[in-house]
Amino acid sequence: MDIWSTLNDTFLDWESMKAVLPEMLKVGLVNTLILAAASVVLGTMLGMIVAVMGLSRRRWLRWPAKVYTDIFRGLPAILTILLIGQGLSPITRHWWGPNPYPLGILALSLIAAAYIGEIFRSGIQSVEKGQLEASRALGFSYTAGMRLVVIPQGVRRVLPALVNQFIALVKESSLVYFLGLLASQRELFRIGQDAAATNGNLSPLLLAGIFYLIITVPLTHLVNYFDKRLREGRPADLEVEELTHADHR
Amino acid sequence: MPTIVESAASLELTGIELAFGNNKVLRGVDLAVPAGKTACVIGPSGSGKSTLLRATNRLLEPSAGDIKLGGESVLRSNPDELRRRIGMVFQHFNLFPHKTVLENITLPLRKIKKLTPDGAVEAARIQLELVGLKEKESARPGNLSGGQQQRVAIARALAMEPEVMLFDEATSALDPELVKGVLGLMADLASAGMTMIVVTHEMGFARQVADQVAFMDHGVVVESGVPEKLFTAAESPRLQQFLSQVL
Image 1: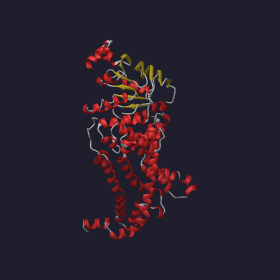
Image 2: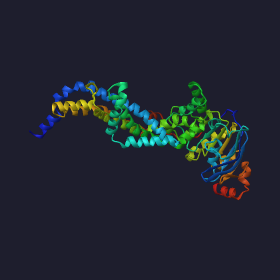
Image 3: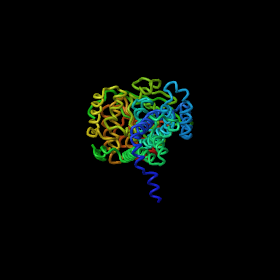
Image 4: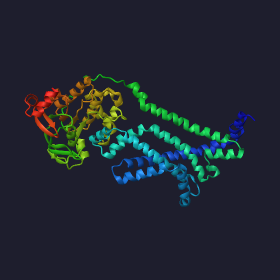
């Protein structure tokens, strides 16, 4: 058996891929997208709260945000997922049964919020002090100035980093596998792994990888698009306006 | 600037003090500007001119002294309310880069003055017309020249119908060929009867437009008076030295 034949049997067994494809599409892809999307939404909201707390002038708001960030950035993701997913399960079982998804989403969101909070904080802090000063000079309160002027600018500046974090979340969603999933709850990785174990080759896992890439590669290009736009300005602006020095009246 | 400013009020600063930690930046500044008049504040860098403006609208809180706007003491009132009555123009324009020119002006009109969206747009367009930039309303600030940005900043402040305008070295960050347009606009505003305090290094402007000039050094007004007297017959040696360097 030559090397090519071995690799072919291990990774490119089309029959194994074909057999698992419907389940990947109908169950795995859907569950991965649900896990990732829910975690992105919750993680982004929590991250903004952590960022605003971290920027507060009040120590009793700033310190909890710092401790939170240190803990959830410092622990391995799998450890956090297991601690929350299994540790809180006896309590939450009364509310939504043995479904591990809510706790998996919570764990992923808590991890993401620590990173997203730091991304938001750095973006907000990068906005020139004059922006808040100008808004205050117009009569906006500190809160309104931050909400209407500073935070929107800060968020725009970190969109590339934010989308990178979303990509990481899509990939980390596979870790909920460790919480134990029913057949209908399996996400891409778990379905790929189960099929790989059954068929004795890695082709289903390769197929799962392709699905991950179908989700993450467009997001990567979105990062590049945001990055380019931030560096070069909006295309419409460039067409409409040219720097003019016709200032003399 | 064809319209006459009707909202202008007098402004009186008495014994204003302000410190950053142990560093006393303002050491008892007195300055009175009658309604509709223009006071120019000149002086070397670090003399406290810009800090004085920020103390006037309480972006920085004075530690002592009093501020009277239209004869009414305002140090104990809500600072946000005070700032709505005092417009300010900054050296670096500080337009909001994520908003268009029009949105820069309508944002405070809608959120603070509570105008309807249509009312805010109408008011903003009037101001843009006055500063000669109506055709730029859809542009982003980053795509305008410095002079145009500063004129938008002036329009944004004027749209709030302030009683007093503060200018903090409004032309210092501009290329020399752009300075004239902005100074012309400020001179028009002074002619229209706006009460203004102008911190400036433009001695020609101070001489021609100001009703009074105050020379600051080390956190105090060393000498003040009408421009003719101050520029031609300065009494204090420090002002004489300063003028000999800048004129």
